[in-house]
Amino acid sequence: MKGDVLMSTRGRFRKRIKDKSTAYLCTTTILLLAGLHMTLFTGTAVGQGVQGKQSPKKGGPPRLVNTFRHQGEFSVITLGTGSPAYHPERSGPSALVCYKGHYFLVDMGNGTQARLHEAGIPARDIDTILFTHLHLDHSEEFIPMVIKAWLQGQDQLKIMGPPRTKEYHDFLIQFYHEDMAYRAWRTGRSMEIVENMEIEELKGKNRFEDHGVSISTAEVPHTAYTLAYRFDTGGKSIVISGDLGYSESLITLSKDADLLVIDASQYIRKKGPGQGPPRRDRKRVQTGDKDWPKPHASINEVALMAEKAKAKKMVLTHFGPGDIDKEATAGAIQEIYHGEIVFGRDLLEIVP
Image (cartoon, rainbow, N blue to C red; front, side):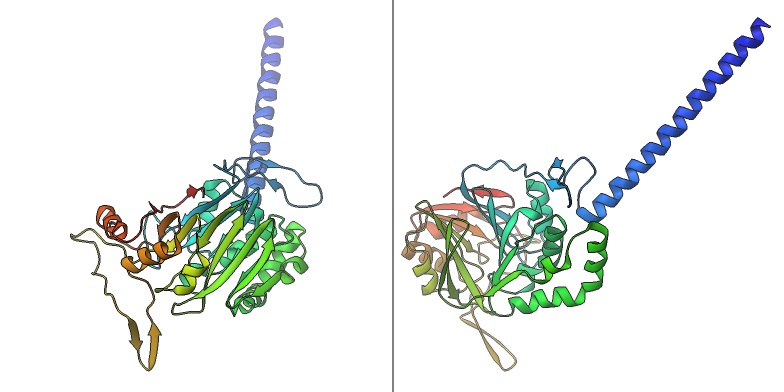
């Protein structure tokens, strides 16, 4: 009898263990499914933001926490330093100007979202999007960036750029309306926010204030209408050139700038197999019946623009496939330009 009681007790004990294991597995499955849902619709895992943490916000999406440690209160991060051609170590052109927790995203080439993720900066923290021009390699992640920022809770995103910027936003709303309506239903976000974003098209010289920063523009020569941007605050300045040929207007815009981020796509490559075709220095390009302006300045012209502007530091960007001959490129520039030269790389933060 005593043995029967002992066996019965062991049986109940084993049953309780089995029941607890089943409950644990069920709970774990529910949490994993919840995590999948959050990843799909907010870009965030449960209990852990893309940037490593999140804090709850009642009545809306979880508040993602920015974990990027800035070197100074005013800086630029070269998120993408590549070109239209694929490069395994360089995303498409994109630069993030940062000032006291405010972010100005200049261009959104392929890989911009991934670089922001790596940096620990949520899309919802972007205050203003600015296009230099509307070539694909500078704008291809605009649509997912806007949708992600909206779903993460950004209510006051501003969009600025050259003519046709509003048309690009209108296409987003029209083409993806059903997709966004579904996501709005799932997340509780309002479609009116993304439909009525502040959009401003710019031409030529402009100057305006945004979050404590004075922003100036100038038209520069390229194969599409292109704007260069200058950011000034606290006696310091950062200029983003966009793609361009030789430009007197960039020289004027960049006068005495502390930092000039410039298109240096005509850099000197190392010689050898797999380094790509040699660069051709053409004044103009003819295709069919259209006479195109020269798309990119030579490395000597890049140096001359920076020297004439008296820019203190120049950051080279827009690199294609093939290894950069840094010694030869820097040597050619230093024959003309006497400031500091920085070879940009993805996720490099530079303080003016």
